[in-house]
Length: 208
Picture 1: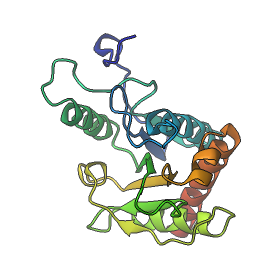
Picture 2: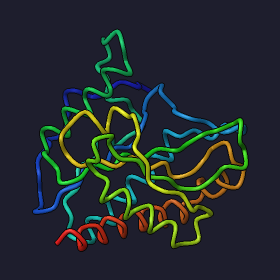
Picture 3: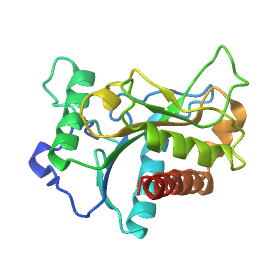
């Protein structure tokens, strides 16, 4: 199986709705992201949550573009730095779509603190995306998600690479055994997507 991006069949990236979201499933291809002790990897769970989130938004009449729709990387297969190439392709997609919001889906890991678990949202250091990150985090804090965190600024490329409001969602910890078990559940993946979409809706209403 090829782990390269299919440039011949590249999708057309364009807005389809008055409110349009780019959903970015973190990692891909040989870049598996974080992993648990029992071999559960971030790459595929990120994509599963992203696909469920797409369905949630579309059910709300929100336009959606996915940066990654398969397990493959977006990197140019001949690029020397595969990670850099992959991230640049994501940036290009966002710039083409000109979305109202970017949501990047990830999983966390902190092996030095295996008791740490739960959801946390991040926004750009300049405050871009804070409204959405705050609302999403509060939605999770008010639910039964084993978390009472605050949204924080994050030094992540996807948050800073374009001028569009962007949120990075760390949906749980692969270093926590309880989170690992939940994150492998399709039902839990769907619930995470529902709560993220709900938080975005709250932010949109509050901004009117």
